[in-house]
Length: 337
Image (cartoon, rainbow, N blue to C red; front, top):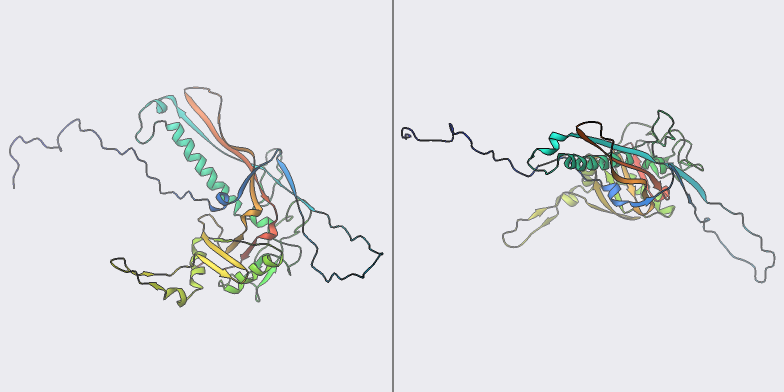
């Protein structure tokens, strides 16, 4: 095999156009299952408040015929709760030249970067909401912080708490420190496991669901990290591992080795893995009892021009409203690996 003399090839040619795709491939995960599932609301102040209430316990209520000595019952007042809004933002600055040149995959470098920053802030919000962060009032030099999910789940009694300590033997409910009183949900710290992390069991899940059921809640979803999603699937053992669907024709049989829906004595739960969920714990959510309230929804603000560049801010100001934390639950102190 030989090439004839003076044959022109691409190896020495000048002026060949680059073949650069106009598509930018981004593998970064963008799912935010919690904030995508809860409601959206609004507020008018950095400190926003709401009220929760509950019915009296059911009792034997038999009365005398013709009784004329009825006394009014003691009044149970609604509980007043509050949370702070926090500010999240990211700035983008692009030179006039960078905005003018022709980039592959985007018409405007500034607009492309702003869109990225909005997605990043949304992920930041998801990570914070699923954390154990407590409310911070803020001051000069100190940023405000909204209380996250775990702040709202405890009760004043371990016997009724919806935070289940999987590391305890036997498994028990535990309380958030100082929880809950009028005002902020839980004082100075969130509940911590009492011992070494334990292997996840159905008993832990059933206890959490029983506590919520007893208090009137109806969670529809378990959220956890990827490792605990596998632990939940392993709870089925050979029962799910041996399930096969013998599909006709050329379609191959499907082996089922995952639990995506979990049926318990107290309700059916969708099992959702989250890349931003804390390890070693499960959340049980009834999304009807959560909302993210915005003082300032996502918006772009153009900052003062001071030179040959454009500077803009993607910003949002928001807080988490737990309409009633007792409609939800958590199991903590679980081995994640």
